[in-house]
Image 1 (cartoon, rainbow, N blue to C red):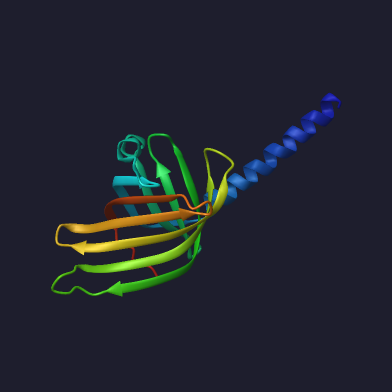
Image 2 (image 1 turned 90 degrees about the vertical axis):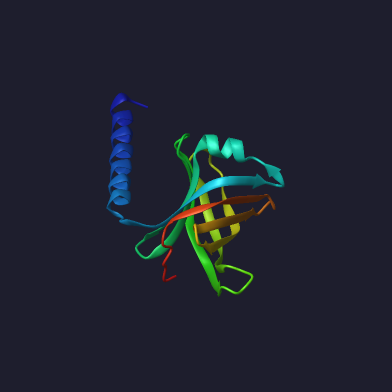
Length: 162
C-alpha cells in the first residue's frame, strides 16, 4: 500500500471516529439514580473488600427517554453499560413488620469498556425505605448463571416512567 493510500485511510478513520464522538456527546444523558455498594457477593463469595477498593457503584440513566444502567469502577476508570428493557415494577407497602419496598425486575444488555465481552443479565433491584435512608439490593444473573449481589444505599429518586 502506498503512502498516499495509508494517509487517506487514516484520515477517513479519524473523521469517522470524530463524527461518532460528536454524536455520543450530543446525546443528553439524564442520571436518574446512583447506588453505592457497601457489601458485595459473587457466586456466594464475599468480594466486598475488592469492590470497595475499586469504587464500584451503579447508575441508572436515560438517553432520549430510553433507560440504561452502568456498573462503574471509579478507581479503575471502567464500566459495564447498556440498555435495560422488559421492566416490571412492584411496590410493597409498609406493614407493621416490614418496610415499604420497590422491586424492579428487568433485562440488561451490556458491553464492557475493559474487554470485548457483551451479554445479557437478568436483574432485580430492591429499594427498601428505612427511616435512615433507602437501602438497595441489586442482583445480577448472567447468561452463564454467575450471580452478583450488591447491597448498599441510594442517591437520587429513581422516579422513572419506564
